[in-house]
Length: 87
Image 1 (cartoon, one colour):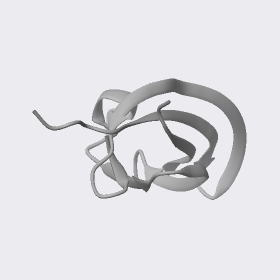
Image 2 (cartoon, one colour):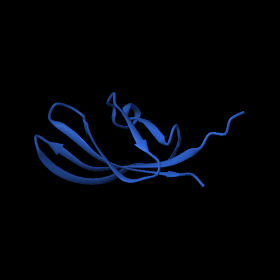
Image 3 (tube, one colour):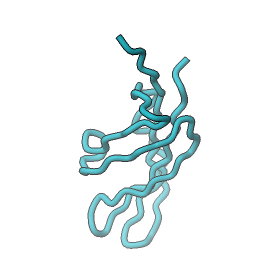
């Protein structure tokens, strides 16, 4: 049986951008959720988190990895992702 390395992932909704206007939010969506590390990265499916069919590939370790995700043609979510190897 292979050992699977795990990363603890935190995702923060830093801001919503509506028609080009940024509104700061600062809401934590998930904290220290375990994700398997594959080739030095974690793959995060955003559908259960934000309801959009998008996948992020985040290097491990990462601190404040920024990603902008379109929620609709007018609304974009600005995310900050931290991925640290689990102890």
